[in-house]
Image 1 (cartoon, one colour):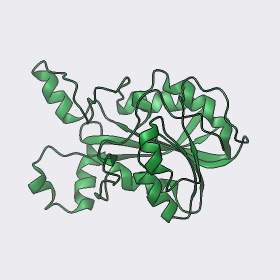
Image 2 (image 1 turned 120 degrees about the vertical axis):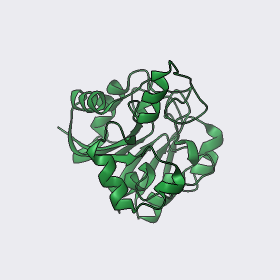
Image 3 (image 1 turned 30 degrees about the horizontal axis):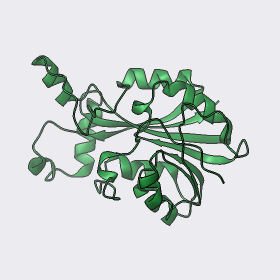
Length: 232
């Protein structure tokens, strides 16, 4: 398959730069992999160096990888069945049959796009009937951001929620609204928790308890949102 895709900016989860995923069982990487499932036909948009791709491949998935950076793509191709390089927002057609994929994965991608809703709509035709998308994106209403705003701070950074390459910001409400308006039905809404405690203390709390606490106040104590949604 010829290469013509990806997204206008470098789309990757920050700690995938070292070609590895976050080992936290409650983190977005582990959850995305679990929601994609095993033995699926997958389009992964913004695959970076292939950190998540590698785990999907180990789960028996057939993966078409999408990446804007040729440098990152040289590493990701080791785990992809097909590799496409290009610009998702200007791309109109792929040399892929419609109704081809079980899953399209948007892992930390939508926040980098000028018009993410149009991308979700445009690529839905490549999903099989009953196929679904998996989305991970940062929570702009996270407690850290709120505290900084109280002191008048909204400073872009090299990574994280306020990554300087982010063009869009989502709360729980606005993300759900955007996904639904793009023609999908949300079947699962999940979070990657972020409690207002030092990591030395958080690490002593069982994952189940940490998750339950965050779920009670998910708009406040979520670092990222994870959505599984079927096309209508």
